[in-house]
Image (cartoon, rainbow over all chains, first blue to last red; front, top):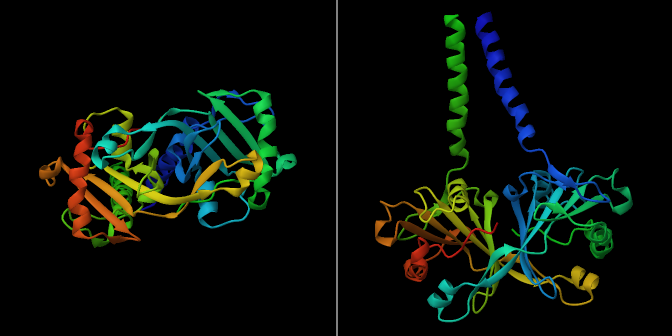
Amino acid sequence: MRRIVAAFAVAAALIGGTAALIPTFSEDAGETAPIFGIKLPEGYRDWRLISVAHEEGKLNDLRAILGNDTAIDAFRAGKETFPDGTIIARLAWDYEKLPESEAAFGQAQSYVAIHPKNGVQFMVKDSKKYAATGGWGFAHFNDGKPGDAKIHEACFGCHQAAASRDFVFNRYAP
Amino acid sequence: MRRIVAAFAVAAALIGGTAALIPTFSEDAGETAPIFGIKLPEGYRDWRLISVAHEEGKLNDLRAILGNDTAIDAFRAGKETFPDGTIIARLAWDYEKLPESEAAFGQAQSYVAIHPKNGVQFMVKDSKKYAATGGWGFAHFNDGKPGDAKIHEACFGCHQAAASRDFVFNRYAP
């Protein structure tokens, strides 16, 4: 019996060891964005959906807001402030009219995402590290490369318009 | 040694058993939709993002297309036809102008998803079961309740406009 227990412990350790190794495959990679020192979060395209949006004006895109597990949990719990470790990703795409649904409906009907546009942006919550900017660090990447200092200087000023919701523009789409 | 091997086998069986049990927590639930006999796929709101879109006309919504793992793998591999087991989910929301970004930009800027609209729809690939409709079963739910037969009768006819892409309107947004 002692042997069996020991074997279970070894098996459990092996399983635990495998699980512990997983983060080495999902470390953030590439160059560090200026000011807030954030690297492109690995695997963000696999994160769950927070919401969708359309931007008019110069941005003129269709976009998706994704969140890591901490972000999704906080949104779903309706938290007014987000806990440290929250990361929110904003992806955006140029769009075009879909000919197949125009054919099906007999009128202009669907506008669908095509190629990425306006970069990919992140909000990273760390209330100590980013205390001067509401607890949020901001990062912008184009094709995996960080944007310049100027674009990062503009982030917090713009997000202050959403100060009453912890500087987060988007809401959770149920 | 034999005992240890046996214990490993028991441990493996337990682990395997745990894995095998997981589907009991994610079984499809609720009423079955007419014609194609599909239940609301459990956990679909946690699936990964395929793309985003905007519908004009009577539909007038912002939408997200999510996919189960089989769907995501097939889209990312650029497969021309989808394997059995693929499930594609179409969620849609009414939308409104976001006052916070209008304040930040000084103009109408962002339109964001608010409450669900136009139901939730699914395409389920089973080339044998749904051979008469291109290998796809279709399902529509409003607040978790299946739509009527009429709405399900219309699905395949409309999707024939996308016959050249295995009846799937949306493309993967990179």
